[in-house]
Structures are given as C-alpha cells and as structure tokens.
Image (tube, rainbow, N blue to C red; front, side, top):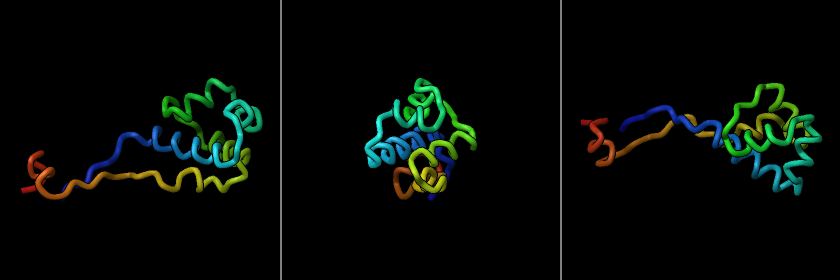
Length: 93
C-alpha cells in the first residue's frame, strides 16, 4: 500500500462550493455579490483555479448559510494505492 498527498485541493474545494451553491439555488453572480466577492474571482474559485483566503471561505459560507467546515468536508487529503497497481508503480514490494 502506498499513501501520497493529493494535489488537487482547489478543484475539490471548488466542486464542494458548486454543489453547495446549486443546492441553495443561487447563481454564481448572486453568491459573489452576497459574499462581497468579484464574480470573476468567485468563478475561478469554483473552477479550482484560485485559492481563497480563510476570510473568503468564511464569507462564502455565510452567504450560503453554512458552517465553514461544510465547505471543507469531503476534501480528500491522501490517495491510497493498493495491490498490483501500486506494485507496478514500484510503490510496494
């Protein structure tokens, strides 16, 4: 078994934000306005192209009426490789 850090945190975060926004039936533009963010920046965050600050995450959570932790729950920190695929990569003996 091989465990390694995942690199796509921003994409995962953006996906969680999109899912939360859609569940709240809010457009990107409306959420950006409620959170006091520029719509272009907000769009980049949803696409995983920009890294929001802690304050920005708090503003987004407030605009969505969520606990900030809800926007982080589900982000996978590590990948686990098992069996032959890991052995083929030389990660396990």
